[in-house]
Amino acid sequence: MKTDVKNTDRNLLALIDFGRQINSKLDLEFILSNLLLTIFAKLLITKGAVYLKDENDKFKRAIIKGVSRNKLDEIPNFIEENEIEEVAIQFGFPHKFEISFGEKSLGVLFLGERINKAQITESDETFLKTVLSITATAIENSLNIQRLAESNRELKAKINQLNSLFDLAKEFTGIFEVKAATKTFLFSLIGQFLVSKYAVVSCDKKTGVIETKFDKEKLAEIIFGNDGACVNSALRLSEANEEFAGKLRQLGVELLVPMQYKNETRALILLGKRADGKDYSQSDIEYIYSAGSLAMISYENSRLFEEYLEKQKIEKDLELARNIQRNLLPKKIDGTKNFDIAAINIPARQVGGDYYDVIKLKDDKTLVVIADVSGKGMQAALLMSNIQAVIKTLTKFDYSLDEATNMLNDLIAENMTNGSFITMFWGILDDAKKKFTYVNAGHNPPLFLRNSEIKKLTEGGMILGVMPTMIPYKSASVELLSGDKILLFTDGITEAMNENNEEYGDERLEELFAQIEFNDAEKIKETVLEDVRKHVGNAEQSDDITLLAICVK
Image (cartoon, rainbow, N blue to C red):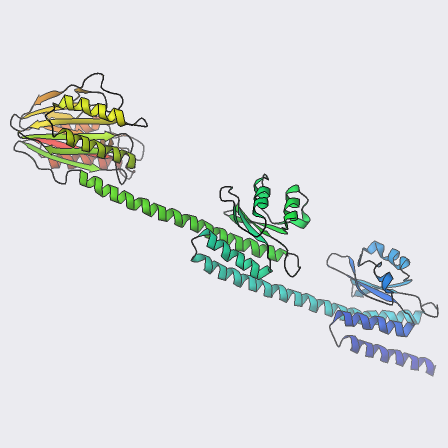
């Protein structure tokens, strides 16, 4: 009886010492090694192994002792739960015991035969269960510490990556060039993942390979020779079986990540193996994707900045052209003894295709011109300036108005391209005779007002520039009386649209002009413009507006 008590005391002291020993460190290998050595010494066993469950519920070999080196390689590193019995028999482990922490299964202990070939007694089993219970607590504590340490490492890595992304974002704010943005982005990846092979490839074949350390020609051939190569999600090439992935693997590419802007893939990041040999984790891919998105924003900013600079240049050129065009129009219109004249030109864009002029001729005569070049913008403005130059030249000679129109049409038809044409009305005010001689070349007929009745000045011919003169232009003359009024205008007046796409119209203009009783050209001009503005409201001006009013004093 005393002997049993002594044995129990010794076992208890041994267990206490064992518990103190394995809990003195949180190192898993130390704990498992002490477990096996304690069991070996107590039960006279020479070999054993411990498999612990991993996150996928597979049993992973954690430690093995007493197995020869040539046999060690045969024992699997991972086994399924249904393979435990097979492994125990195959590799000579007749004894196996579950390692559990509460109701949670941690793994399995395999033990070989005892040296004396004796069976494990009930007392031995009690000892083993107690030892495994103590060990399970130590294993769980060790695994928890490992998980905590791993979480801390991941958290630290995340913080480093976030700091890197923040620094990268700050860098990109001052970069407006794609090459510079790409280098900054790639330097970040090199620093984070220690890669020596990398590439950035645009999904736009015209832009092509932006930067690469792979074979450029082969890379371009693979990317642009594959339909849908610009994928929308990250691709670990070791896990992909497509022909496309296989070709990239042969080139040395390990990872492909899309660079997206507004959920659209614009480019691809391709990375080779890491210098440390590690695989790219999901966290790494998320970092690369985020950094790529920042780079894409920088690319887009670069594009917008280039467009802005180009637009500024165009705006500057247009402003210069507008100033030149404005200087071509009369800066000041002086009336004559018998005629009061006022005019205005409002281009729909910075430059326009409408033209008017008031040119003093000899013998108390004044030439008034209004014209409308088809189209708007720079092309129309250039044509208009050429027409003005020709008209200025023709006034130096004593051609009649119809002869001059014939010559003008032939010259324009010879040089006009792209189906452009010009409508024009011009006439000569004879101050001495109070007479107005005119030719209408397909232009909106000016309104001649006398005693509240309107007559349209239509005599002339076809529009200018369509074809050489086949039917000569005709001129007509109007004897003028005091109080007579003439209104010349372009279709920017009658076709001015409001927000409901309703035109101002000829009828409204004629009704307004017929009601005018005052004999003031400037006031007539402002009255018409004000009525047009009232009709248009907040709608955008759709065409150039030109207006010229003449009152007979």
